[in-house]
Image (cartoon, rainbow, N blue to C red; front, side):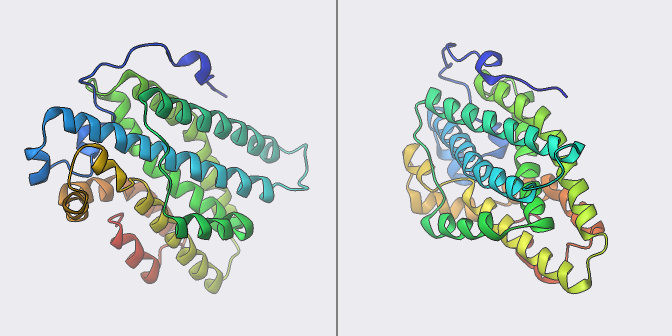
Length: 276
C-alpha cells in the first residue's frame, strides 16, 4: 500500500507566497457572490487560507472520532484477518493526517477552529455508541466531501504548495480508506431489515449535517476583515457553492442509494446542506 510520511514529503520550511490561495477559490463559501466581487485580492487570499484551515481543523476533529469508531469496531476481532490489519493501518494513516493538518495550520499561522460546543458534545455520543454502517457511513461522508475539495486544490496552480502537497497525500491515502468504508457498509447492510436501514440512513444523514455545517467556522470571515453577519448570509445563499456541493456529493449519494441508505427523511437532511 502506498503511504507517505508528511514529515519528509512536505517542505515545511518553504516560505508561503503572499498571493497564493488556501484552497481553489471556486470552493470558497463566498466565491460568486457580490461580496466576493467587493473584496480585495488580499482579503480573498486570507479568507481562503482561513477556510482551508477551518476545514483541516474539522478534519482533525473528525479523524479523532473516526479512530475511536474503528478501534471500537475492531475490538477483540481476529488479529490474523486482513480486515483487522487494514483497520489498524487506517488508524495509523489518520494519526499522520491529523498531525499533518495541525502542522499546516501552524505553518499558515492560523489557530485551530472548532465546531460549535453543542456539536462537540453530540459527537461524544457518536464516538461512544456509533457502530456498524452508521460508523462507516459517517466516515465515508467526511472523507468523500474532503476528497472532492482536495482533488481540486492539488491541481490548482494558484493554491499554496503546502496545501497542494497535503491534499495529494490525503487524497491518495484516503482513497483506500473510502473503499474500505464502502465495503464495510455493504457487508453490514447485506442482511439488515428495513427498519434498521431506515434508522441507519437517518443517523448517517444527521452526522453528515453536522460535519458539513462545521467545515467552515464563522470566524474565518472576521479574520478576512469582513462583516461576519453579512458574510454568513452571503455564504448561506451562495448558489454557486450549493451547486459545487451537490456535484461533489453525487457519487456518495448514488452509493447510499444503492445501499438502501437514502430514504425520504435522510434525503431532506442532505438537501438542507446541499448535498442532494
